[in-house]
Image 1 (cartoon, rainbow, N blue to C red):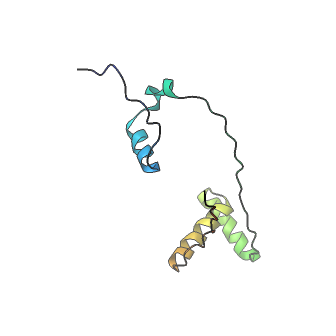
Image 2: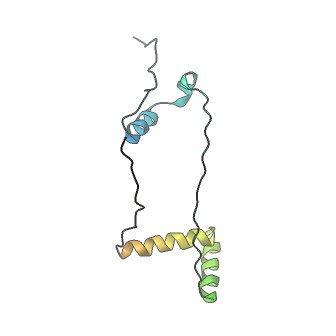
Image 3: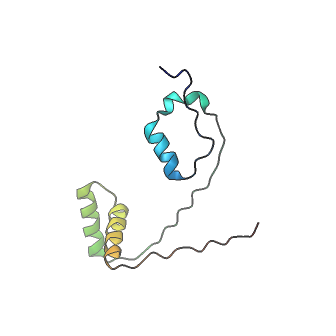
Length: 101
């Protein structure tokens, strides 16, 4: 017997994984009437670190990036991440200060 009433979008998910599982198996188009417009604002903070590299390395980096169709920044970040992963130095996490409620 077909269901006359479709499932409601859960008010709260227990975890991001639960939300992902829900939307992996449900089409937002079927739930559009249950959504509402919200206003939000955020400030994306991106920190850049500048490092001096030798001119020959810079030329080779640009050539490698161009050959792969990516920016020099992208390829440098990928290679640095790969090399640092090989030497097993865990990333330093920023400490989060919490206040008691």
